Image (tube, rainbow, N blue to C red):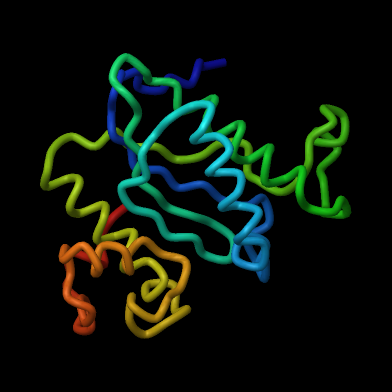
Length: 176
C-alpha cells in the first residue's frame, strides 16, 4: 500500500477542504455552526493557528489556515476540531461496518484535501475561491448573502467591496 504523504512545512499556510461523510441533503455543519465555532476556538487555544479565510457550507467547509513558525502539525488540529464537533452531536448517523468496528462516528470523511499555499497569487486565488463557494454551489446569488463566511470580515477590513463578485469572474469560479 502506498503511504499517503503530507507536506511538512513549519509555519506554512494551507488551503483545506473538509467534507462530511454524507454530503447529499446534509446540513450538519450550518445547523450546528455554534458547535463548530466552539471546536475551532478550543483547538486554537491549545494548538494555535490563524484562520485567513473560511466558508462553512451545510456539508463541507473550505479554509486557509496558517500555523506558527516551527509548527507543521495541521493533522492534529483537524483531528481535534472534527472530534470536538462530533462529540457535541447526538449519535444516530449512518456508519459503515469499518467505522463501527473502529468505534468511529460517521460525521466526517476520514481524509481531507490540503494544498500548501505557494505565493501571494495562490493565496489570493484560494481566498476568492472560498468566498465564491456558496454562490458556486447555488446557496446564494452573491457572496455577501452567505452568513457562514469570512467574506464579511474581509469587507470590514477593506479587502473587498461589499458587492464583490456580483458579476462572476472566470478566475474565481475555478479553484480546487
